[in-house]
Length: 391
Image (cartoon, rainbow, N blue to C red; front, side, top):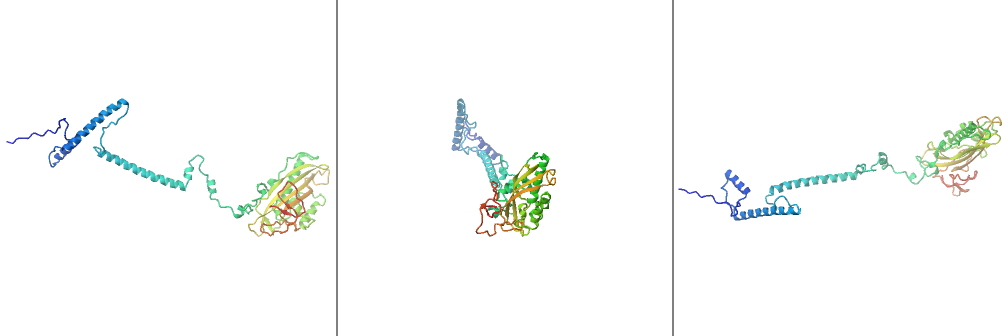
């Protein structure tokens, strides 16, 4: 008769199971799956480790309860050594760590790429800052072509013929000839004084700014403004144009250039000066004009070299009452005309202005005083041949 041996008691003297739940469950699973054998009694070392762990857990629980009395928060989970019962949890955490590292690596790559893009195009960043960014106009100015050598040296060019000249800031052409407000003087009505001012302005424009006059043609428009009844004046002017000489010089009234020698650059002549009026003798009004004209010129055959000639004129005209004088109503009489020219030949008497260009050989022994043709403080001596300090 066989006897059965009762199963061994798997408890220690303290009533604590000698095999952990996880180990027991694994043994049962192996047995149900047809494992090699029934559960076996764990070794003495395994039982000692398990007992120490449980003691640690109990000590941690007691410490947690004591900590709350002092207001210090203790960990809610029992203390466990690294790597014990935490394998799967650490693997999951390591997985999150790898994802963080991959994300950090991706963000680092994006940051480096963004820095490279901003380095190549700073406007992508500055456009979004207060006051940052450039307009299309200012941006295009950064690729503007460099100034020409002549511009860099302050010399005039075809595109900038007044560069380096005080006339650069002067008015353009007829815009620089302004008439004062009229009032009745010398027995002439306000309307008659205003007419005298306007006709004088027309004479200055026709004699000094009209393209035909500047090309050396007959200044017919200017001549038509003059009173034919003024004794000898109109005839003298016409003779000086047709047959100029030292005594009959049309340049006393008109600015003319030889079209075979020079031509005016563009369509702008710079102008500066003033105009006043006062009562004339015996019932008339006299108009006083003092203007400087600056002409930019190139050679007739072309080229890029630019010269400037400066002409200052003092002109006094009169409008007479035909009921008191032998005069034509509305026509001007010339009372006086003076001129000073900077940068023209002293020897020429052909009725044209002849400027010198920068490349022309200069006279090694200039005659006469040095003068500044732009100086409007004093009237320069007429008839003397000197040296201009600038053009």
